Amino acid sequence: MAQAETHTPKIVESLDVAPFAIGDTKYDNRVTRDPVKQDRLKKSIAARGILVRLLCVKEGDHYRVVDGQSRLDAAKALNLPTVPIDVISVSDADAILNGIIANNVRDDNSAYEIMTAALKLTMEKGMSRKAIAETLGKSEAYIADLLAISGLPAPMHDLLHAGSLGVPAAVQLLRLQTPEEQVRVGFDFAQNHTSGPQATSILNTYLDIRRKQAEMPPAQALEAAQREPLFTCEICGHNKPIQGSQGKVLCAECWREMQYLWETERRRRQEEEPIIRAAGA
Image 1 (cartoon, rainbow, N blue to C red):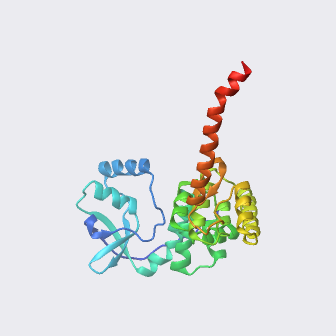
Image 2: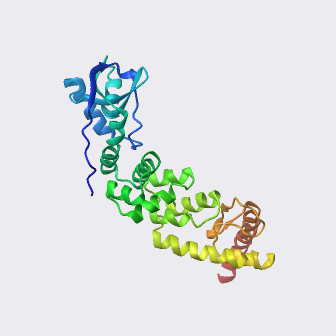
Image 3: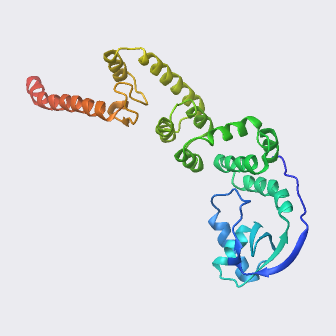
């Protein structure tokens, strides 16, 4: 992995400050922290104090931590009266942003964390995809995919963060026209652990069927929908289909109609079963 360039900031002043006078960092892309590591750090600080000073910037009458969020969290949890900080300039804080994000990506190497870091570098630094890829030690194509899927609905971000939806499958969701379709199909991909090639094949078939159904008369479209498991119901214009039985995905009205037919068939077979057994006796 490429190493981020280190930057030694100039210390403006060093002092001790109450932890609750220090705001949380905006330079950290991590969403969650390892509770085991955090507990170990808290025990160390309780026994020995904070050995490495926090880097902060001054914001009005308060401060904001640039590097040392975990130490600040531990100090607040331990109700320490003060923490040692070094105050640096805002320009220095901006200069070390790349290094902090790169370190976080090495610690939390999930697609979601890398996507968050890439977005931060794009929005706050205006960096190109190539520069982001070099900073984070990833390929430019991978960064391009992550920036693209960052536009998917929030539930898809949750699946990426959980690791149940892979990046290649998520990229295929961009081929769908509405957020509702993306969420519905994305959950299906996550539940079935769909790979990138599988997602590509499924959507190729799905979009081809949709194109053909758009050209069919309604009765023929209904017959086609009952033959093929689709992600959406093209029969009556509903845009919120639900998962039906036997692998069919139909809108609520069509699903109820199919349920009635399937239930009728089930009862008929139950009624005929004793007759068939008696005939074979």
